[in-house]
Image (cartoon, rainbow, N blue to C red):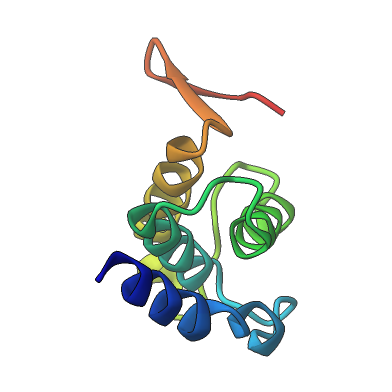
Length: 103
């Protein structure tokens, strides 16, 4: 059964990285994909994870926030969600209430 599940996952997710328009992917959505990859167990070296991390890190605003095409009302949530997703892969760490990038 595990081999069947692994094959289903491989076939389902295998081509997604090539189907996403990374330059247009909303940062909130990139964080959601990254959270999903973490739940599946993908390592940071997986191409889908690496692409999401890159999109989030390159799309971050100067003030540290993450903008969202869903509107200004979603900026705070997108920022928290993006930081949480990156922290699960060790790219952001929290120290004394401040985020410090580890790149």
